[in-house]
Amino acid sequence: MVMKKTVPPEHGTRVGGASSAARSAADRPAADRSAADRPAVDRSAAVARILADEPGMVEAALAAVTREIPAYANLDARQLEEVRSLIVWTLRRVLELWSVDGALDAGDLRMFRGVGAVRARDARPLAAVLRAYRVAALAFFDRIGERFPDTVPSRDLSALARVWLTVLDQSSEAVFDGYESTGRILSEDRERALRGLLADLLLGRQSHAGTLRARLRELDAELPATFDLLVVSPAAGAAGSADDAARAAALAATALDARTAADRAGDLELTSLHTVMDGVGVALLKAVDPAALDRLTGAHALTGARLTGVTAAPARVTDAVLGHLAQDDDTRRTLDAVIYADGAAGAAARLHLHPQTVRYRLRRLATTTGRDPRTPWNRFVFQTALLTATP
Image 1 (cartoon, helix red, strand yellow):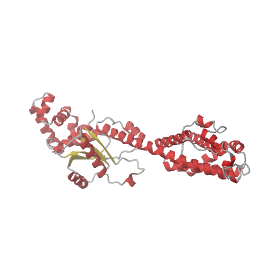
Image 2 (tube, rainbow, N blue to C red):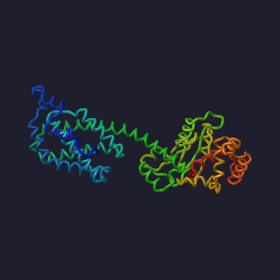
Image 3 (cartoon, rainbow, N blue to C red):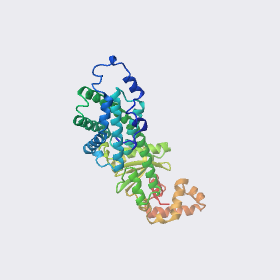
Image 4 (tube, rainbow, N blue to C red):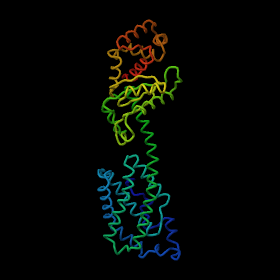
């Protein structure tokens, strides 16, 4: 229920002067309006008397909102001032409409859509935002009954209630629209940001613990203490492309995440995340069931590698695969060239080395790690190690 701190100028001065829609309603001949519509008192004078108590009304509404709605209980001073500002605007606008038999116009609805958009960015629950308007309205009518029983007789009180209910109905729809549309955009942006974070972790660009914590806080997310890292792509002989790799990574991240949507709701911990790096899919999962992974790869013609017990420190991933050779620049450059040149001969040309030198280094790599880089599975493992190596 928070908008800008300043009351919108086009609305802040309208209590004494009606909008075009309101003037049209007020200018109708009295004979054209039903007896229930015709005021029993001079509503302009009643509005003036009610607004003389505006500070008390606003504080009563604000106290009710912060007392009854948990999402509003711990707002800071700036946020409370924003809530107060919107209560002021709503109170004045409803009284204006009541005084002239008016209705919300297009500008009002745009403002409420803006409120919904801001609340989506703040991640305040939509249900709490909509309830805040109802709670504030009840507090307002309680105050009217206590302070102005003679100023607003029953017929006019009924008309005021109808106006406020109409405003609640129309404003709720506008707030919902703004919240939902902005939420969809933010969700897409957040997914892109999380994929970017995973890519930076894999490339070793996010190895400082303090910086990583700050970035996760901005994304409203937490990494598991340890997780499994999958590198997946279509099996050898199947059509392969970046899109295929992306689909493979997304499939793995979705199918192997053991938690249900209900389990994930409201939980900040990232139990599955995926991206594409250098033409292969990479999926981060909190834990992978090997049997489920075997079923998935068999059913969808995928191949890949799984690293277990990975942490957010990229160098540890590299060390787990390469051992002490992780610190050997010649080995890492050779492995990189072999993977991207697709063989020892191409790697030798790329590195300006004799092919035998490259083959010697590969044999030493296989002996040290127990992995033969000529097999597809181990190539994935080594590629993962290189992706996570600190430059």
